[in-house]
Figure 1 (cartoon, rainbow, N blue to C red):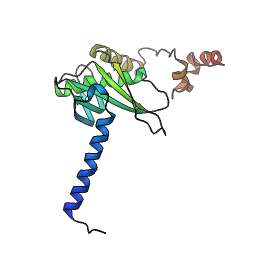
Figure 2 (spheres, rainbow, N blue to C red):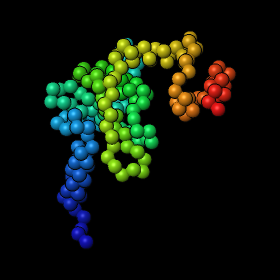
Figure 3 (tube, rainbow, N blue to C red):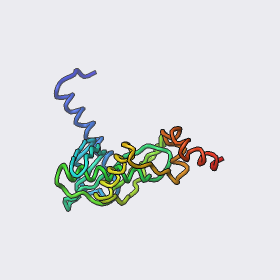
Length: 181
């Protein structure tokens, strides 16, 4: 067995990184093949016009200079959720405000299914505008401070999986549960 040396350790680490870069490049959506990966697992913040902190999975710079966001998900359902669009839209607002760079109005959600050894599927999504994100933040703040009441989701699947479902029973949740049965 070869003895350890700083040069060998450096070479092994370099080879691992090179292999990881190759895997990352193969898993990219086709529209990003010529893009440069510029941000990985970074948090960006803004306070104007509302406070937003968003940790993004990946951001790529196209040859045009525009940034494109990619969100990585592992879950059973095969398509993007509206919550993915909200998350990516908040990331867009925070990244643009923090860096001053142009961020594309479309992004990608890469979805891998748990336990399935297949490449993730890329889904292109249109993002909310900055004004729509600000409106959502303000609505959330109004709900949390009891200035307005929340609306109930129309999607039964989202309702069944909601962590706050038990708190809804007195305000419409019980009726929805009865209707589902």
